[in-house]
Image 1 (spheres, rainbow, N blue to C red):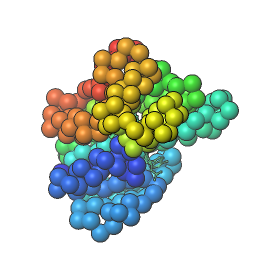
Image 2 (spheres, rainbow, N blue to C red):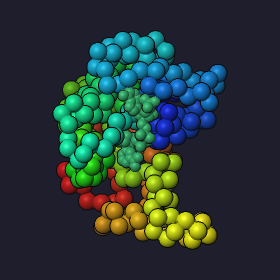
Image 3 (cartoon, rainbow, N blue to C red):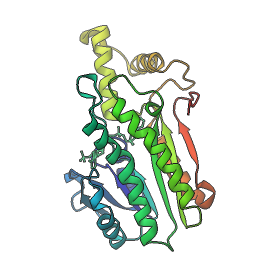
Image 4 (cartoon, rainbow, N blue to C red):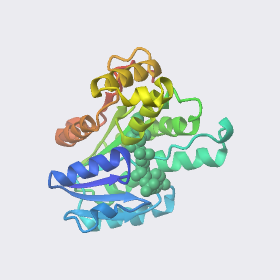
Length: 258
Ligand SMILES: NC(=O)c1ccc[n+]([C@@H]2O[C@H](COP(=O)([O-])OP(=O)(O)OC[C@H]3O[C@@H](n4cnc5c(N)ncnc54)[C@H](OP(=O)(O)O)[C@@H]3O)[C@@H](O)[C@H]2O)c1
């Protein structure tokens, strides 16, 4: 497959990019930073772009089409900055909405226009924070709520094309950043010396307890493994037309409130 992954420098996008390359697929990564570790790796291509700039959408779609007709587009790039002083600043909200909702949907729409005879699956990532934002992440949550509406609209308007649009609503992921935060919380609670003596199994139990405390009612009180997200993305790509308009949840089994 030809796979476009946005936001492949860190977190989920990075893990997906590495897995797709490892499985022998071609990957075009789109983000601001570089993956120096992948320079020269067969099948890897990089476009360093700021997805906060709506004006780049048509040119980017043209560049992606020229790279190779994408079979799968995974929108993992995200802006997630704490609201300064707990206030939602208008310019920050605007930037979050552009990076997290407007530009990804516009890019998929531009690709659908340009590659109207291609079978392409477009995957977007939702989050529990869309309906229940953490206190300091209101701009992020609002942008992800905007994404829900824009993706539903995109799915409706592409219904008669070969382009499939699907969403995965994710709970807290087992990204290196989240693991580091949890481990710091454990060290702060137990003391660094005691935390260092925990076995892997004990560490996992404490992490699960912290996730359960953050997400009361979770049926799966644990960080969502990145490999599970990769499998779900691949399954959506394999579904073809049947996956169009799907919203799947890997969100700790919590009741959706939307
Ligand atoms: N982490 C979680 O627990 C969690 C939970 C639920 C849902 N999700 C969703 O999963 C997806 C991945 O999240 P993550 O935590 O893995 O993200 P992350 O670690 O913060 O990585 C974000 C990526 O987006 C890129 N990016 C940020 N701003 C950009 C911009 N203006 N233009 C282009 N690229 C930009 C970054 O690269 P550069 O800085 O190099 O541009 C980076 O590669 C997101 O859609 C997020 O909402 C995550």
